[in-house]
Length: 490
Ligand code: NAD
Image (tube, rainbow, N blue to C red; front, side, top):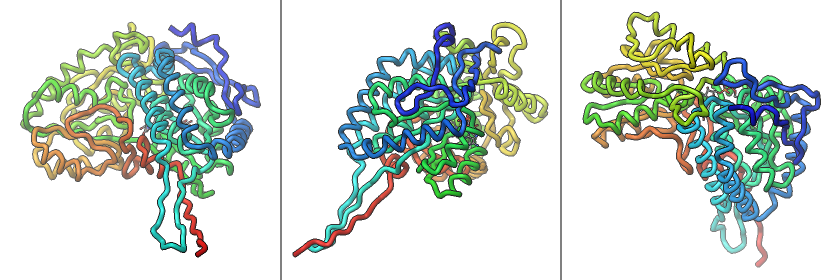
């Protein structure tokens, strides 16, 4: 499964060259699917590597910025084609490195990545300013100018998808970039860098691998970085906001979530159950910031929806992420595995909760070879329980009954987070009313899939600042406005 990955000399991309770290330090990358199995090693960047990467991005910026937009557009569209032609390689390396199951997660992630490169390439010419009707003696217009060097800092849970929100948008708008891969999932990002580098001028995209506290912190504090575009935990996001604020760098934050999924009384179809399954993100081991992990079931439909959802979840096959038969893969590493297990143990010890499915994963056999959790459902939950409030980032669903619509809206909004929400019901008017009253950046009605190309994406409250995935998000997040007023003769 991993033979093709191991011997390969993975290096970082700086200024168009594939380099080791200045210190010569390496980091070992382990398999989520087989405990203790090394997949590869990658350079361990530190502050001096960050200096080189930022210098390369700064040097490349003026020429990239000053091109006609169609040059950037052509390059991004060529990259999209090249990603598409290597999509199976990218999906396989994502599955091996992150533990995301290839059929349900890794391949769809690559498809979305292709779509994002095509979308941002396509709208590259829409980074437009305005002209004020200021009379015949004045020409007053604005330009949307790129910010300069953008640092993209990535999490491990869906590295290519998150890179797809940042890289083509920042580049289409005329910025250059330094991308830092997550410690535990650098390989898909390095493969993406290889593909991009076939088409981009040297230094336009630089990719480093290293730890958050060293390479990441150096990037955030670097005076040559104009914007930090961060996706990760709320805790680290706060730290990055503070450090960026010290030097007034632009910053955007895509952070954690604890998203509500609200089911109204009405018809219970297979489509509803499939939608709930999708929105729970259990096939991503629950390692998704948009997981509908608080499931509010109206009392009238509570028992039937619960029974049918549990039956559907029980059918899922947990196993080797590289196996097409697996619906659910492995959790990223031992730390996450233990953290999820601590939450499950707390749920098992809570007499108010009923374990409907899952619980502690098997200690022996096939699943014990890797960091596998099994789909877990607790019913009888209260919105105040720690398991209902904190982001577990594992395949754990907390089921909370409700009767009164005002009460369910209050409970749904009673959270520090505000990333996503899901509303399910036959009465579209009630569903839309609730959608408007939910404090979240992204609400879906009667569907539970992932982000779509071109939509606005980002969080309310502690789930973040700024928007990605759309043209508007690109203009707001990766450009700044310059006003030019000219006195005309005559
Ligand atoms: P994390 O916050 O631990 O790390 C994210 C990135 O930040 C990594 O590259 C890490 O090396 C870096 N980092 C850590 N400390 C740093 C520092 N002091 N300075 C600079 N960089 C630093 O997050 P994670 O565990 O990799 O990812 C899981 C989290 O990401 C979850 O909370 C999840 O909800 C969130 N997430 C959010 C979105 C979204 O779009 N809102 C998407 C995916 C993941």
